[in-house]
Length: 489
Image (cartoon, rainbow, N blue to C red):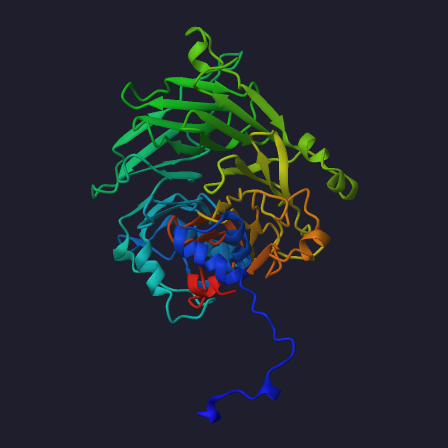
């Protein structure tokens, strides 16, 4: 028995004590069945490091054995770059290639994409995802077109697409070149929409028609008949589909600038909108100083409850103002954080991103990537493309397509000063924190093409990026990054 005993000499005088903090953290998770928010933030650094491109799907589709408009636009673009102008077919090509919008249904089963060349496509996401296995990241894959639930080439560019939150068989699309919202039902094998909604006719002071287009869409999750769309004339249109094809309510910004993006908040009763003039507008449909329900029915314009000039708010950040010349920029997109209801993310024309704290009306986070000219990048910002980022469903991470490089930025917008993007972040203090196991920092994920739109799977946080060449890039976590390995860090 003595051979199994440890001799006295081999026992160190000051034995190293094991750090039980991680063990207790894991025990708390196992007991409560959920992550503490700060502990989840500690793990987000590992999560962000795990992302990489696993597949690419070019838009190489046919309709009745003929190239679809997007496919033809890709071919013409390639010929144009090669200088072969004589071979370009201008008969049916009316828009440059590029994914303009993406959206998942609530369960992440189907993915809908819209292109600037006019193709509306509903993909089977599971088929896309599992086709990526065993392939090289940069290699283009040929998607099985028979798996499409819908592939409709339309005679105009598309700029917005949304699933109906209350009816997952319906998907709506719109264009900045048309005042029409087309609603399709994927349960029907038909190229015709089941319903078409229109904006009201507007005229100028000289009596000519105002040409309106629609830039973004939103469905109400609680009111199955309500559809909201922003237009190119500074108006938010609200339809009650039970009443008719014209808007039942119009909310005006008081200007004629394009509204690029809208969001619904607080039980679908507060509407945020932002656009070309660099301001964020807010309307409260429940009541208030200028709310719609308390206006005379003869009144045409329902002005916002408040409007916030983003450049003025950025100037209040002393460290940012000292380092940069802040000018008003067009807002490409706004998005509410699914993990934190008071965080409204914004993305600007110059590539900057940040977070507006809607409770305190101040900018709490900001990310300023280097300008394109500094990196001598040939992939300069394309003014024809609005970049549309997306939140991950957890961890307050914002996925943004780069304005100057081929790839996406994963931005840590955790609601607190421990976020590296927070305006009150102190790197010296955070480096001394005993909680910090991995350095918290934003990460750039290189991809094979320039990105115009991102969307995140609602359940597993896989990112699908649409590109300027109309490809779909699948960006996923490495398989070895499991929840157990994250807990053991």
